[in-house]
Each structure stands twice: as structure tokens, then as C-alpha cells.
Image: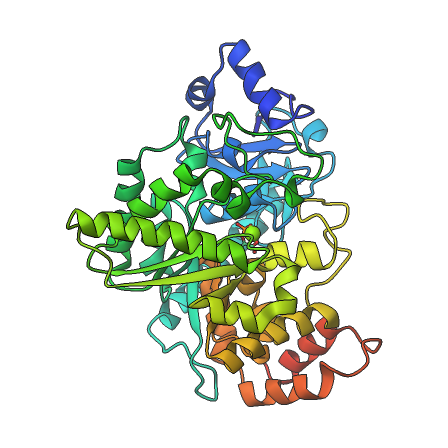
Length: 459
Ligand code: PEP
Ligand code: MG
């Protein structure tokens, strides 16, 4: 493993500064990183992970790192096995130690004995055979056992993610996190670089739908070169995402222009992160309209259609669902943030990450209300948080009415294996009987697990 200098007590910014003071900027670190390195660190920001060369990184072990924290999401998207919440890992591991990182189970084995290594080698072979099954599944239609179509899309954010579209057999990109390009850069990416990336994404998608999200920075996604960054007491509730870009419209205008140009002759699906009130959608729409007018004045090739959506992450929108559905072309539920705000639980706090369950009755009722509002208003509703990527929660979402979900590419195989065995009508009856029943019976997760076990649905 590669122990990050044991400097992990400092926050990310201090880490960077220290590295630079010691003459070890990201490039030096990259050069000194051995091949097949596993980083063991107390905590790490998503931007910092992207400083390391992908081709040398074989695993990431974090003492912090909840499943929905951005660094874990980014690591998974890059196909790096990651184990979070590994208390004491930094003090226990020494440089040069062998470590097995089991990203699937979220476990590590430090200095493994030969028999454990052999057992893991067998496990890896078993998983490879299962991957083979998933590859076979790609050719099958994405329908439930009783024939209802569900689109399984993937989340992405960097050019390196694109080959996964075909490999995973995704129906398209349901969430393209445009901020990742900003996070890997050392200065604001120029308009041309943004346009080039968006064009590459659309080319790679070969006509499959792609939903771009306008930059979602702030919170735990800091850009070191963004001079206006402010210290906030509650960054998750702070100056981030659409709040920030509406205050710095130059940033948003440049991105929208790049997107409009890249999508010339094709469809542009654009969504806004962290919408809190409908006025923000109207403001963004004004900026978009102005850019459209500007480009058409200069005879640019415009998108064939423009669909504007909002992410549903802030609970205020739950109390104006019909108005929201009418104000946009589509809604995408960001369950990572929505869960954080509905349950008042920091998505990155490992002390609390197992305490509340997204498959509990109250949160499932929230998700159902959103799906119902979509049907009522004929507005398409999708979900792109981590919840979509676990077979048991994907099953619940489909039972609640979701017909399109977006997840990390590695999840598509397991979710499709569940989908094709799911008798949806029975699950709908299950929810009719259980979802509005008093919430003090058996936990919903246990009931859902039993539902699947009784019907041999692979979860
Ligand atoms: C979410 O909040 O669920 C989401 C998809 O956005 P992000 O994880 O990038 O905050
Ligand atoms: Mg979010």
C-alpha cells in the first residue's frame, strides 16, 4: 500500500499545501507512486483522489468514507475497489504491506496469510464467472419477469467512464456529473475543453440518451482554484450547486453555451442540481434562453430539442410536487442528498451511515409520492443516487413506480439479474399492503428481503 505520508489528520487543502511546500506536488506524488498501489488514508476528498494516476491505483482504503460520500462514488466510477469506514487502517498498515481490498463486501485483509490469498483468488474467479453471466444478460431486454420495461442507465463524469457504457450494457447516461472535469483541472476548464468533453460523451453514447447536470460544486466538492470559496459552518446546506452558479452566472453561461454547441443537431437533456425553489428553475431557464438566442443569431447549429430537468434533492420540493412537475420536462431524484436532508443525517459521516435505513417506511413513502406525482403530471421521473445501484433498493424503487434508474456501471449487471426475475405485479401488491400500514412492524428491508427470497429473486 501507499500510505499517504500519515498526513491525513489535515484537511484536504492543508494536505495539498504541505505536499507543495515539501516539493511534492501532485505530479511528484504520481511519479513516486508504485505500480499496483493501494492508498490507505484517514480521509480524502474526491478532487484529491483524481490527482493520483488511475493506471497505478489498485485500491483505496479509507478510515472515513461513507458509501454516498463523493470520494467513494468517484472511486467506484473509476473502477477502483474501495473499502470505507476502516477504523485504524492507517496506523495498522505499513508501507509495503500486502492488502486485499474487497470492494464488494467493503472489507480489507491486511498482510493476508497464503490460505486467505488462495481463498480470495477463488472468490475472484467466481466473480469473474458471475461477470460472464452479467455479460450474457446484456443481450436480454431490460424487462421484469412480467414484461414491464425498466431503463437501467449509468452515472458518469469523466471521459474514462465512457467505454463502460457499452461494457455494462447501459441504456444511456442518466447522470453526467460535469463538475468532475472541473475537479480534475488546476484552473477552470475553458469553454472549448468543456464543449469537447460533452461532444465526446455524446459521440460515445451513439444516440443513447445522456443527461448532463450543470456543475454541482460546493459542499464537499471544492475547487482549489475557485477564489470565491468561502468557509462554511454547514457546507452541505451552503453555497453550492445551482445556488452558486446562479450567483456566478458567467460560469453557468459558459457551460450552457458549451453544451448547446456540443449538442448541435442532437438532443440536449440538462438538469439542475440542488433546486430548492421553482424560481431557480425560471432563472436558469432565462440564462439558457438567452444563450439559445445568442447562438441562433450567429447561425450555430442548435440542439434538435432541449429538455430541462430538476434534481429532487431538497425536501422543500416535496411540498410542491405538482408545481415542480409542471415547471420541468423531467425530474431526477438525487437520493444521496434527499436522504441526507430528509433524515437530517450527514451523508459523509461514517458514525451515522448505518443508523438510518433508506428502505425504511418514511423514506419509501417519500419516494412513492414523487413517483406518483410524475405519473399524475405525465412528467418523467428517474432516480440517480446510490440507492439505484443495490439490487434490493432498485427492486423497491421499481415496485414504487420508477421505470428509469441510473447507477454506477458495475451495478447494472446485478440489478438486471434481479429485474429479469422480478414479478412486478406481486411487488406492487406487496407495497399496497405494507407501505401505508403502521410503520412499527417488521423493518421494510427485512420484508423486502423475504419477498425476494420467497421468489428466488437474486439480490
Ligand atoms: C445525489 O445526491 O443523489 C446525486 C446523485 O448527486 P451527488 O451524489 O453528485 O450529490
Ligand atoms: Mg446530490
